[in-house]
Structures are given as C-alpha cells and as structure tokens.
Length: 357
Image (cartoon, rainbow, N blue to C red; front, side):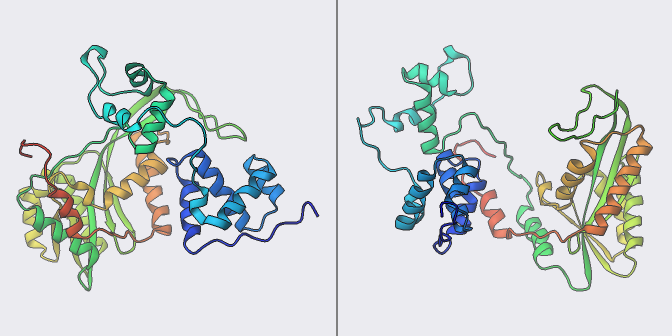
C-alpha cells in the first residue's frame, strides 16, 4: 500500500503553464521552484515516495505541499509570514543605498552585497535578500543605442510591413554578410565528449586566414542562399546579388539589408536600376537587429563556427557550405512578431536627462 500512487493532483486552470515557467526559471527562489516541481510531479500521478526521492525531500514535505496547493492554489506555494522577532532592517533603505553610486573612497563602479553590507553594518545575506525581493541586480549592465536615422519611422514601417504582410507573388529575402570569420585550428586534436566528461580542446590555436559569408534568408521558408568570399567589398556583394537573382529567376525580390557602404555603392545602384524586379529595403541606422538574417548568423555561429576546427580557409568554406546544405533540408520559417508601433514606441521613449540623443 505504501508504494501505491496517490490520486493525480488536479491543477487549477492556467496553473500548468505558470508552474512550468517557475520550474524553468533561473531567477525564482529555490524553495518556490522545488514546491512547484513537487506539484507538477503530483499532477502526473507519481507516488509521494517517488516524488520525495526525485526532489530530495521527505515524504511529509510532499504531502504538505500537495495539501497547501489543494487548499490555496499557487498562492499556497508562496512563503508565508514567519513567527518570531519582526524584521529590524528596512529593505527599502538597503535598496535606496544600492541605487546610489558607491563613495569614491571604495574605487568601485557598483555595489557588491559584501561591500554594501560592510558599508551599512549589516550582513551580506541581508543585502542579497533585499535585492531579490525588489529585483535589484547591480552586478548586471546592458547597453543601448538610439537610432538617429531621420527616416526612422518610414524604414521601420517598410521593413515590418514586409515581414508581417509580404507582397503577393514576391519573395522577401534578408541579406547581409558575416565578415572576418577566422579559420582557427587547434594545436592538438580534440578530445571527444565521453560519459561524464565534456569535449575538450587546447586553449591555444593557429590562424589560417579569414573568410566572409554572404547570405540571403528567405523568411517564408527559412531557406538560405549563401556564398563564401575572401573580401566584402561592393564587388563581392554585387556578385552575390547576381547569384541570388539567378536562384530566383521568375519572382520579384524584396531585399532587406542594412546601411553598409557596399550595399549603396554606385555599381550596386546601377545594377539594381537595370533589374527593377529586385528592390532594396534598408533598416534604420543602428538597427541591423531588424534584419532576420542576423538570427540565422547566430545559429551558424553556435552550431558550426564557434566550436569548429579548420585547417585552412578552404576547409572553413567547405564546412560552411555543408552547414547551409544541411540547414536547407531542415529549415523553417522565420516569424516576426513585433509591430511597427511597438518598435517606434520604444524608439521614442522619453529621455531621462536634458542631453539630446
């Protein structure tokens, strides 16, 4: 009887998605993640003893959180107020001190929990608790850049319009080049992955030269037309445009690209005028992230280039072409989700200073 599974716990509407999100999160508290995992396993109908073994808790703990969820749902999994002496330190004051720059005498750019704890005369664990409560992360930093393109609105609407409502009987292609790809070889053979041991490689390497990958991503299918060339001047770019035109001989082509000088060279403009079925649409300046081929460049970087070893530029180019061939056999559409209004709303957010951007 002890190993007979308890009846599967019935989850409330919408709780499965919430619990799954909590379990996958790296920002939630460990206790909440553990309780959510218990509830999810209970919903699968596993025996309490099995759940306890998998999660690493006592059987009574499993029973307690099953009961709490049944009574109060997701709210029952949250930490409740504990008895004992009330908190003496106001977490708001800790956060307020965190938001101010450290005194110059410390010579640091931001607070650590230990330094702020010493500065305030409290324990660093108390500081860390306050930071978690208010979502303050002084060790993190992000970058941003405002687009100063005078045609920002028009370009955003143009590119997003192609993504969300492409023209009929036409192909939308995202075009760009990934330059300076290094053909790096290791000074000793790789040690392959084994059970209990990851792949290993030497820290030092040998450079064999560089290559440039030109790519045109068809967003409707994910299919890629690519070419590897030694340089990335207007000459190579124009040759690639001609290759793309040959790959799609009967359709009108709408090419999304950034504002790199080679894309607007007089030779390229002259060829485009002679081939009116090929139309270019430029992303705003400092907004190359709107070009979906950048997403694909990230894929090939992670899956082929970053961990690859290449004995020569010829070897590098061959492996890039092999990846493109394999990719086109398993490709999928690239779907854009943000509207032009959503992008422009962020681009026009009010500044926090009098400094013009």
